[in-house]
Length: 399
Image (tube, rainbow, N blue to C red; front, side, top):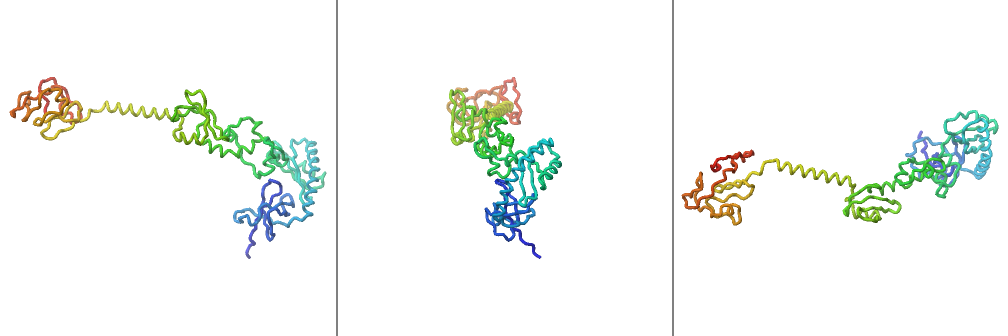
């Protein structure tokens, strides 16, 4: 046998109350229809707020009770009469609670549609033993009495009232569930941390603190905090104020007598990613300076660069670090203005090799080359990476 397919419909029993789902069965329901259903408090009249064709049946996992029938005009009239009758019984419940010395606050009470059950809602700081109170009320009113403890937010929702904004309470007019509110949300919105200014009619933090919290986080997420010092392309500054509703930021530039107020969009376009905390800038500059000092110290401690080796027949490389090679023994004169020309003051040799021991003329007929410096380091020792020893003799360095 094939099970009958469920047809969920959303039913609400009170204004801005929670939505409960029931199986519509074969009823053709539309939004706004009143129906009679069976609940844990007895039969009640509810209003359809979600039609069956607006619900995906596979998303409803819980077991659904069936809708008994469409509400008749007599059912609606009887519900109104029972509501007035419940208001009269509310005073009776408060009186009995006071007589028994129970530290509770009876908020409201409701009759079931058949008037067989009466439910009282109360608040208390701690869990209370209300069984004696329920028995006394049941005997006095000749009806089955149920006692339900609720929270402070539920109490404000039932009692209703006007908020500090001058409008009706959100929880009583349209808010179906209570959001989670924390003091962090008040800090993010730069609100004064005064309990009397952040509490609602229920005595808890205002639910409206959550309405603009995401916008504040989004706008202030990429901005420096108030009081922070930042480095900008135009100099250093301190953040004085961030006005999120107006989307402006106030800066106090160093050396300027007046503060600067600019829109956040211009602030981001003008400075972009160049805006950063001053501490971060100092950290980067310190790291770069330490790196430069370390590189300079390493360059000073290392061996001097190896001289360039000339082609066969050319002169020796200069030990003073000059990248140019010495003039060839058989080549032309050194370049004008070179150190060799300034040092010798003579024309270079025309041809032949220089005498290995001194400055005599070569067989080729050229003038004698200036004797080599006896303090010049040996080239072969330098090529191995060590420093050449300086000799005190007068001989020329080995080639």
